Structure formats: C-alpha cells, structure tokens
Image (cartoon, rainbow, N blue to C red; front, side, top):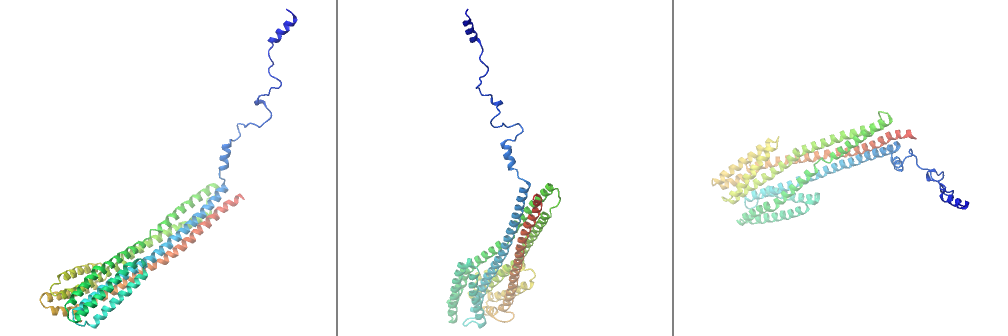
Amino acid sequence: MSQASQQIGAAAVTPPPAASATTAPPAAHSTTGSPQPTATSPSPAAQAAGNRTMTTPQRLRLLSLGVVVAGLVIGLIGALTYAYLAFSLSRAKADTAQLIRVQKIQSNMLSADATATNAFLVGGLEPPAQRAAYDQAMSSTSSLIAEAARAQPADGAALAALNQQVLSYAASIEQARANNRQGLPVGAQYLRNSSAELRATALPILDNLVSANAARAAEEMRAGAGFIVLVLAVLGLAGVIVAQLWLARTFKRTINVGMVASAAVLLLIVIGSLVAVLQLRSALNEISTGSLAAVNTAADTRIDANNAKSNESLTLIARGSGQAFESAWKSSADSVAANLARLNGKPELASQWQAYADVHNQIRELDDGGQWDKAVAQATGSGRASSNTVFGTFDSNLASYLDGVSLDASNALADEEPIMIVAAILILLGGVAVALLGRWGVTERLKEYR
C-alpha cells in the first residue's frame, strides 16, 4: 500500500477535537453577566414581607391616633347622648303638661254639665251663682283648648274637632235653658240630649288625647340611651389598658404617666355614666309611680265624680224613669272610691266623698219615696247638708290636690334637666382629656427615637 493511502486511512480514523476554539464556554464557568443568587440571599417575597413589617415608631404613631380618636368619639357621643336625654326630659315635661291640660278640659266639661243639669232642676231662671260657675267652666274649657293647640301641634286636629263639639254642646244647653225658662217640658229633652252628646262625642276625643299624651310622656321618660355612653367608655378603658401593657412590655417601664392618666379619666367617665344612668332611671321611675301616677289618678277621680254629680241631677229630671242615670252614678261612684283608695296620704278626700255619697243616698230615698220636691231641694240647695255644698267641698279639695301633684311632677322633671346638661359638658371635657393625655403619654416614648 502506498504512503498516500496510509495517510488517508489514518485521517479517517483520527477522532475530532474535543472543542472548537470558537465554541462558547458553559454558562456555569462564565465570568461575565449578572451574578447568580447565593443560598444566603433573601428571596423577593421575604424582602416584601420585611418591608410590610411595622416599626415601633409607626406603631406609636398609630397608637397616638387611636387614643385621640377614641377620646374624642367618647366625648362627642357622650355629650350628644346626655344632651338628647335633657331634650327628652324637656319633651316629657311638655307632654305631661299637655296631659294635665287635657284632663282639666275633661273635668271642666263634666263640671259644667253637672252645674247645668243641677241648675235645670230649679226651673225658670237658674241661680246666679250656678250660672256663673257654668260660664266659668266653659270659658276655662275654651281657653285650655286654645292653649293645648298651641302647645302640641300633633293634637291640633283632635282639638279642633273637640272645639266644635264644645260649641255644639253650649248651643244645645242654651236651647234647653230657653225652653226651661218658658216652662216647656221639651227643655228637659234638650238637656238630656246635650249631656248624651257630650259623652258620646266630646269625651271620647278627650280620652284619646289623654292616652296619646300619656304614651308620649312615657316614651320620653326613658334613660336607656345613657347605657350607650357606658359601653363606649368601658371599651375605651379596656383599649387604653391594653395599650399601657404593650408600652410597658416594649419599653421595659411599668407606668406611662399619660396613658395611666387617660385610663383614670375613662374610669371616672365609666363610674359617672353608671351613676348618672341609674340615678336618672330611679328618678323617672319615682316620678312615674309617684307624682305623675297621682296626677292621673286624681284627674280620673275628679272626672268620675263630676260625671256622678251630673247623673244625680239627670236622675231627678227624669222623674221616676231615670234608672239608667242612677246606674251610671253608681258606676262612677265605684270608680271614684277605687281611685281614692290609691291616693295614699289623702284620707280626708275619701271621707268627703263618702259624705257626698251619703247625701246622694238620702236624695234617692226621698225621690223613691215619692217626695220628689224634697229630693230636688236636697240636690239643689245651698245649706251645709245639701248635695251641692258637700260635693263642692270635695271637688274643691280634690282640684287643689290635683294642682299640687301636677306641679310636683313638672318640677321633678325640670330638676333632672340641668343634671343631664352638666353631664354632657363633663363627658365632653373628659373625652378631650383622654385624647390629650393619651397622646402626651405616647409622644414621650416616641421622642426616644428622635
């Protein structure tokens, strides 16, 4: 074999070089480009979490803001709450006054009717004193209706309807009197119709007004709103205590003067709010079950008493056919006796009512025994033992008692208003103090980082 052939064969079996001079080195051995992360470098997620971690100064600033907001919120809501309670007491006082006003209208109307029916028994021209008493009762009724309409617009429509009924009643009574002066029997029928119309139309309106104003007064006489302040103050106190514990643990100091002072003010607000709410509830309960209850009982008593006196005269006017009026008298008399039993400390009123009831029984005995003229004389006379005199004593004393307890109820409600106003001012100042003291306490710790 030739030398050229051997060279060709050797070239064919010679392996290729391991790497070309132009081949790029492996990426692992490159000395250029971006450095690769090592095992100890934080990952991007870890860096983001580290950026979100709040520093102690940031926590202190947030705590300062929280204390300020909490103090101001407690102070503002507390002031508004107690101001609302003061306004509610004012409204309760106004509603109570309106209730008393309406009850007086009711009493006056029945008193006027009792006077008119009694004077009707005399025949001809009624006694001047009774005519004057009737006119006074009707004039007072008209004045009270106008006053009530101005005092409570919500009662305006009902009072307007009542005024129309009062005018209609007065016109019917005048018509009955005109016939009675002429000796016409139809006058008695006009009188009975007038009394029946009064009880069928005017008195139901008054009953509804009494119920509406009593419900309004009861609604306003509630102290539940005061517990809102108490709850907020307790929550604020708990928050300040937790903040104080965190400050003590973080800064290795047991007491932060500003936060402790803030907690002390909140504790005073908690105690003061609790005392104020309990005192108000106790006072309102005492008014409701005391003077205001006495007002309602005394007013009902006077209304029923005058209703009984009117039916006494109507029974005599009916001359033997007045059993329905006598039954009405007994029903009213039972109500009067029951109400007088609830008026503690006024046994003289019960005695005076019993004296009148005894005179009424004498009148019934005379009438039932065929002595109608003597019965009328006993019912219309002016002697010490007459029905008018004995009943007049009872009614006058009951009216005086009613005025007294009405004034007591009004004064008791008025006495609570200044307390609520003072409480509103104090809690507002207390809330501001909580905010300022808390901020000062946190600021002292924050200065250590400056």
